[in-house]
Image (cartoon, rainbow, N blue to C red; front, side, top):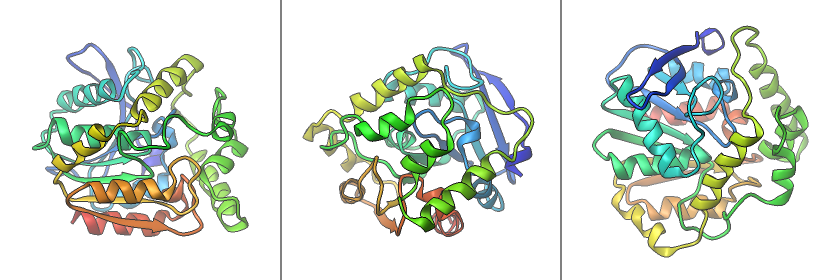
Length: 277
């Protein structure tokens, strides 16, 4: 179970010591989870990871300078991608499936472009393509709820869940699952680390048609998914992303915000496993 998975450390050729957790049966192509802005090992829903781990070898990790990983926090998505590749090379992962969530979805797209033969299938959750209009930074109300050393319950509920009774209740249940781990927890991302990550988010969101057109080269099977009431990545950007990829399918989950995968965790895990098969 993910809540009991031990923290492991591996040193890569770049000198960074990466913290990671791994669970599920060993396989030729692990499912690698790439986290959202300010996300750490403890930001993933244990129930969702456990559902994946029934069939898949699941790997979650902290990028350089985040959580329990050493090094300097990445300031661009290209740096995040190079950092992710350094970690994968250290683990000797030659082929993988990728689930990129929000900012992690930016990295997933770059991985598919820079190392196309290594990526088998892409799951792009609540994320947007480089160069799209309307993602040049987060909305002010979202930033106001995210810029704290420790993200509180109200910050989670406002940013990740729809502002309805059912979605907010699901948000409280998610928070409860995330605090089940009592020992060897990860550490939050400090202000300097958040500032560096936000630079990467803003740089990715600079509008530009040429950047958007690069996705024509990503012919991997892709599953694009998100919530119908996402404050961070509106559904129109999910449609744009799926429409820009040659081999993508799209699903929008109802009454859900940026954390749709933590609200519809059972259905999403079934959809992902079916897609990966």
